[in-house]
Image (cartoon, rainbow, N blue to C red):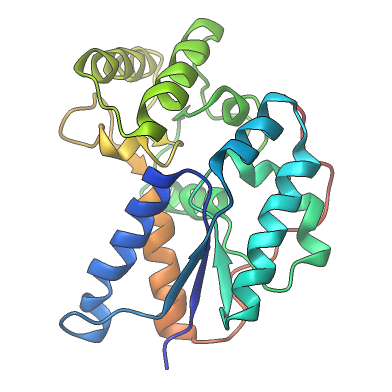
Length: 240
């Protein structure tokens, strides 16, 4: 039997894309209309935002842990979180987690290496690009770009607002990264794949949302209830 996937959700648009990908692409493994069992839990997004604004990563971790416990109670075998930013809090709760996790950063980095990319750009919230969720040698946006990208994500994308001028801004940032020698870019906000892909970006895109969903599918189908790729070791999360 396929494993039961537990989704620890944060913002709605990214979580919905991850869930939809699992359900639609499950047919490739299991046959028409079939996919593994999936459960999802999320508190009010406002609770996460309040912790983020206060730099309270332990609080973020407690929200994630509460979701993890609820998903474990209804039978999930392992957990994923379709939100790059809040992975910073995972080390705070790793030892208390009732289930193991697939780590979105590990999955994206492994995919980049498999494809032979050597200099990778990173886009996402300001909390993400100032963190260690992704390797430090990944190219970050400038301070000014970080502020505007964060505004686009938090004021528009997480609310389901997709403005042409914001798409154009993201395209300029990625084009600048290409000019600095990047050969790929991580779409490190799980909403960014809703407005960017290989067809409209100057660099090959690493879609963190769908890569996570596909890794969860592979894990559920090929390994059932066995332990997944890794459980993150406990360590202090970086503060923004």
